[in-house]
Each structure stands twice: as structure tokens, then as C-alpha cells.
Length: 481
Image (cartoon, rainbow, N blue to C red):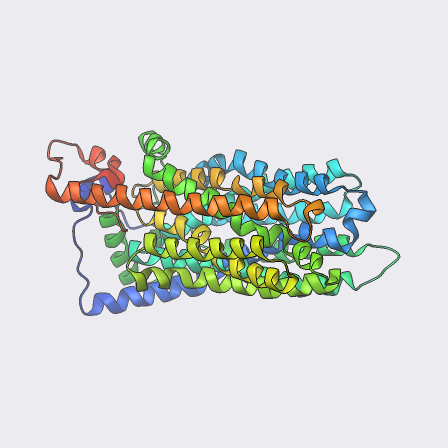
């Protein structure tokens, strides 16, 4: 279907102007959102859940015989875990630039198929360097899916609906974690003279997401103004909304000025700091959950199965954070609460002398620590405008923020079992830093809103293209706290 001509430059005067939906418009928007939820968001969520299964497969393979068969040391596992985050770091920005240059449904589907293939190749690893190299490659090809999906969501939904959908998207990774525990526990119980249990884990995880990726080109569609599963009435309404929000993405042009704006924006850097610290803490369960549980006296198979419970807590945390933000009156307040609960969990883990109390602490920070990691990117995307700046900011924040677990990978050492004091201490410090960064960002956004209310800038002499390039610096734009 041919797109509705948006002519963004000709509508620049409408950006950030109030758009009141009354009567039938509300019903039309509700119908459009339901269709997007059931088709696009559902597909992305299942894909991200399968991504979580692939990402966590190494942790489960470790306790299923991988360490023994390949002669791995604790450091070898940490290097392999960390290699993923390095690969992701280097390829986040290029991936989102490619997303702008290509058709999103093909790019996201190709990314999923690529990481699935790499995961299955891990079953062929013969030595530590094989595993580390494949994990680096896994991070590189997977880089485009997370930030690409976040950007994809941001231009399909009105601004006020982005945070909740992003919360559901991140929660799907927890659902993947719930599934991966029993799945790997069952695969570990299979004893065959032809294939090791840890090899089965990699093969099955990769095969599941590879099959799902093949549905992508048929289920996903590129842009609202070219979608075939919505009515013309829905398309016209959402186009009006996106023009007002300055988030029309069907133009494939990359605006260099907005790329520079994203990199130079101190607010993006603060969101990135929050993401970095939150990711460091939240990946403790994903990378070391089975190891921590096994160190409390449980068998490897039982430890794999029990991680379903910690991942259930993580899912509940990520799914609820958007609702908490609405309840307490803003994202900043919700993140402060999450960081306080996370800090309490790590303090309890450090102070405890009993295995039972350490397990309670694990459940506590498994619930709360993923909340800032899920909500901070959504908070950021809800506060950015332009056809390029959100994509670049999402990629930058995810790339740099994704390095947080790189530190975590090296501080949870086998020799510190069962207390893991070094790891818990580092994650506690990162949690406190995230809370401080959230406070600073809250003050910055509130002052900027007050400044624009007090003395809005005059943009009457700007050309329409210059108005578009203001993005969220537009004087009528107000940040959500």
C-alpha cells in the first residue's frame, strides 16, 4: 500500500500542538492500538523472550557439563559472558543506522535469525576461545534487535502509550527466563552417547528463535502509513498524532544534526548512566542465578529449575513498573522505589549468614533490579522527538548501558561462593549510583519544563525543516517526569 503523504516540513507548525481526541476518534485510536498490540507487540515480545533464552543458555550450559567438557575456568566463563556485551557495544549504533536505511521488518527478522544461528554454533565449541568468539558474534548480530524494537515501538504508538508497551516488551525477557529454567533442566536430564546436554541446550534454544524469525517478514510491517492491517481511518488518525509528536519515521533520511544532538544531550547521558548501573545489577540473576542457587546447597538440575521462580519475580517487576509510575506520579519516583528495594536486597545478601536468607535476598533483588533497566529506556523514548534522534539515543544508551553487565561478569567469582560479597557490593554501589543519576535527571527535566513555561523561545524565523530538527528542544515540548 502506498503511504499517506505526510509532508512533514509542511506540517511543522503543528508539532507539539494539543490534539484533543473526542467521540469517534477515541474509538478509532483504541482499535488501532489493539491491532498493534496483538500483532506487532506480541511478535516482538515473543522474539525478545526467545532472545533471553538464547542469552541465558550459556549460564545453564555451564552447570550442565560445559565447564568440565571444555576444561573451562571461572575466568573463561566470565570472558565468554563479557564478550557478548562487547559485541553488542560496538554494533548498537551501526545497527540502528541500518534500521533507518532498510525495511524494519526484514532487519529485525534477519537479526533474530542471525543470533539463532550463532547460538546453535556454540554447540560446536571445542575450546574457550571458540566460546568467547561466538559470544562476541552473538552480541554483534543481536545488537540490532533490542534497540531496533524499542525504536520500532516508539513510532507505532502515541507518546503516552510507549512506556507501558516498553514495559511489556522488557517483561517478555523474564517470561523467557521462566521457560529456560525447566527447559534446560529437562535437557540436562537427557544422557546420550552422541551429544552432550549442554550442546542440546544451545541447539534447542537457537532452533526455537530461528523458527520464530521466519514469521517476522509476514507478521511485522514497516510503518503505520504503509500498514495493511489497519483501516484508512486509523491510518489517518495515527498519522495526525505522529505529526504532532514529530515521530513520523517513514522517511528513511538520517538527519545528521539529530545524530549529533543525541550524542551531545546531557539528558541522554544521564539516562545512559541509569541504564548502565541498572543493567549491571539486573543481569546477576540472568548470568549467575543458577550458580548462586547451586551454591546454597541445591543440585545443578534443581538450581536450573528454580531459576524459573527468580525469573518469575523479574517478569512481575518489569511488567508492573509502568503501572507503578502512574500510581506514584512519574517515572523518577518509580525508579527511586525500585532502587531502594534493590539496594535492600543486596544489603540483606551481604549481611546474611544463612542460605535461606540469601535466597530471600536473591528473590528481592531479582524482582526490583530489572525495573529501572526496563523503564529507563521507555522513559527516555517518551521524552525524545525527531525521526533520527530517538533511534540514535536508544542505540547509544543501550550500547553504553549494556556494558554494565560486563563489570558484573567478573565480580561474581566461584571462589567467593556462597556469599559472593564482592559481586553484591559492586551491584549495591551501582544501584546507589542509579538512584543518584535519577535524582539529577529529575531536577534537570523539571527545571527545563519550568524554563519553557516561563520564557518560551521564539522560533517564528525558523524554516519548517529547522523546526523539525529542534526535536525535543522545541519550546512547546514538555518532558514527562
